[in-house]
Length: 126
Image 1 (cartoon, rainbow, N blue to C red):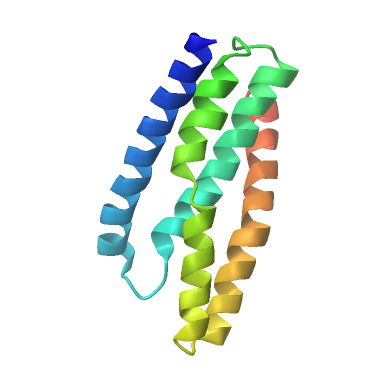
Image 2: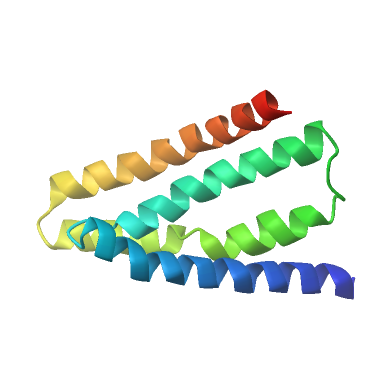
């Protein structure tokens, strides 16, 4: 059981650091007028989750405990739906209703599409 906690903790630490790096770098590249970093990590996280799960569940390429490291740990620390909620409400409170609706839709539908893309990409590559 201790091994599982270490896997989740190590993955979570790495995922949180990766998310923080995105929050520093992406606004410099893309601007700060839209929550690009949160959107990027949510889309990328969904892609990686389904890509990895396909290779784990359908192809058996990884030890099942690696799901704890990658999905529960890394992606749990990397994706930011709590931040997503705060930023959506902040846009609404700032009178940016249309931008808030676009942001909500992009993240809500985008993560599903990114997940399907991850699954399909893993199928295609294997």
